[in-house]
Image (tube, rainbow, N blue to C red; front, side, top):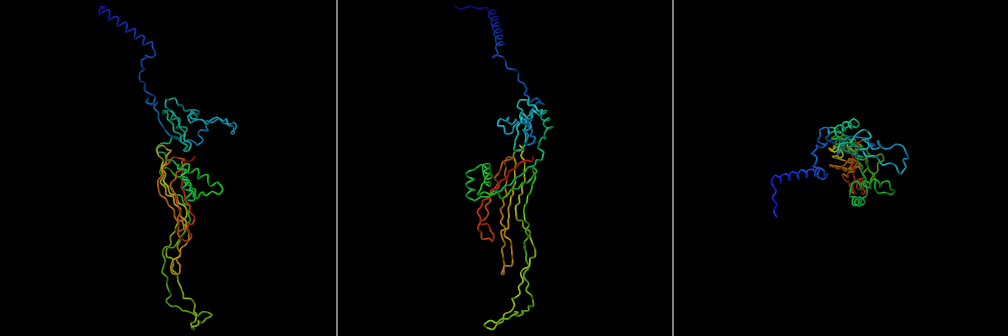
Length: 348
């Protein structure tokens, strides 16, 4: 059966249903229309987040630590976070996404926050801007050990940090074959060069004047002349003049370390240009028919290269193997491999 509904009645019914449907939707939470898009705090001008890096004391986290108590108590409270320390100093982290990270080895704090809190932070600690010149302490350490032991150590400890930790602990052990040959510290400003020397300055002749034989020679008979079986008398020795040094040159024997240090933008990574050198006089060589020309013999180990690494991380820059049994007077006879490590830290 078909029922005919007048058009006016149908339209009114549809309108009522529509209004009722909308009313129901307004009362149902799941159907609440989404709120209009809001500008996030990061884009609200003064509320925009910034990231800056600050130089802070190495004991920065201890500022917020609880003082007093038994230091040997195993239930001591945990070390506070960088954010907690800054909040105790009046810095707030209300803006979404704001944070603070403290890097122990470099004594650097990286904070992300709004400009107002950045200004408060700048009053407490100096902001390390891109134009700020930093200083680094460059530690050069040279270890020596037998070649086979060095090879096994490099295989057993492929990571530089693990290899350095092993070498650092070995010299303290009794009968250890590992020896610390050299340790020097150079203070270098970022972007600058430095040179450290621990040397002996040894002069040696480089040019000689030819021997001059006297034009007139008197050959007195020996005080007690003797006669050979053939009746020839014995006279005094024939006069001899050796070569005379004409000019000298000074040679450095010891340790020299040249370097250039550059801090990258993150202030936690450094680039190094390095030129460590070790030179020592091993003996004196004699030349000439009468061996009256003496010249020094030097043994030199030199390395030139570039390296990159994190602050506080030991970096293996090269190895040395001094020449052995070359036949040079006073030359090296012990087979040793030298491992050169560089570690960059920052002053307190």
